[in-house]
Image (cartoon, rainbow, N blue to C red; front, side, top):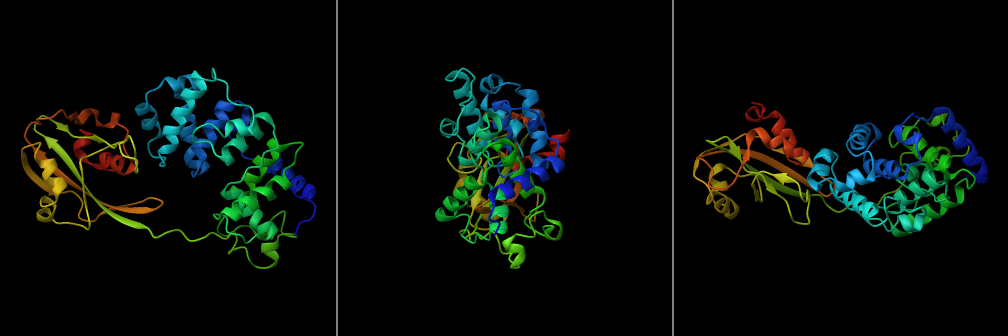
Length: 355
């Protein structure tokens, strides 16, 4: 094990200064921009998150701009990033900072933790990057580096593991330059000590890395197995009326995609035929509100949309109807609505919505 923590941090920072990527949020210490980048990059790779960051900064240059926006506009701009609770929390926190804190973000780790959607990692990142406080960051990249270099086999998703890694990270942080150290550690994990096929032979720590010496690179870090993935079967009723309208419903429950829009949904216990579909209670409720002329299945093979704890087997049914009795959405305006990426992909590919 590397015994000298100063040696570890110095070597890491030297590597970072020579190899770091030029990223827009690294050119500022503005808490708003750092906070925004950290929320976007939660469970998101830099390559995917960067365009979203630039779009948010362009659309909402200040926390006041973000606070004044409608939730639907925020969700629409977030569309495709997933984990939409992040966007809702982002908006709520912007309003709180704008209205209650007069646009000034808290300046220390403890106060930052009180913001909605801000956990240990994000609070540590903002506190260190913006205010140079010695608050150690611990995310997936950090777990991986520390587990391998120091040979820690405690499961990273266990209560004991989280405490152990946080303690180790805090011991290792360079208190004189925590801003640089934290960014260096995250960068090294993201680009060098990667999950699969890390470049151990040329690694700056290979002479003292416990995992490398003991051939444990592929087994560290240890993670407890997740619960069984749940399978769900979604049938979306894509209504096309004679007056060129469709129906979108807003999801209001506490489950997935809260506040996003979707076509009328009929959930089943398995893939169903048209006759089986028509016998489902949710279909009966749906069909009572309109005069259906025809129903046809758009995709025989289900689109499998994978979420963290469930897989959605999705089929789209084209439902042609007479003019709607209820208020509908014009086909020409459908792209203005914030929808899950599953729905967005269908809309982008379905020819009717391209006209």
